[in-house]
Length: 86
Image 1 (tube, rainbow, N blue to C red):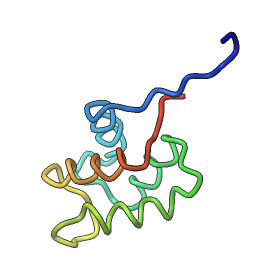
Image 2: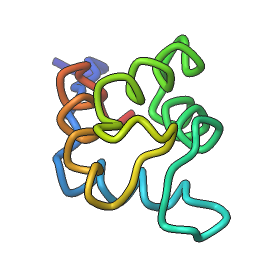
Image 3: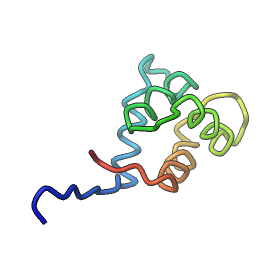
Image 4: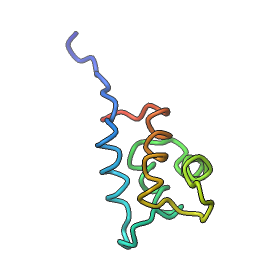
């Protein structure tokens, strides 16, 4: 067992906190760039693509950004992709 890495998935609460921390301009929305940076920090091998797909799935009003009301959709999307704590 020694030396074996155990990957622990992020919880919903952890992902919410991570995504909120990437709202760098503090406007209460996550832009595509902020999403790309968030997915990069989560270890995505294609953060630009993941941000595009996250917007497609989570941006219910199609304004090109994720609001606080849409954050739950974003977290649900991220949970499906199995990001783990490294």
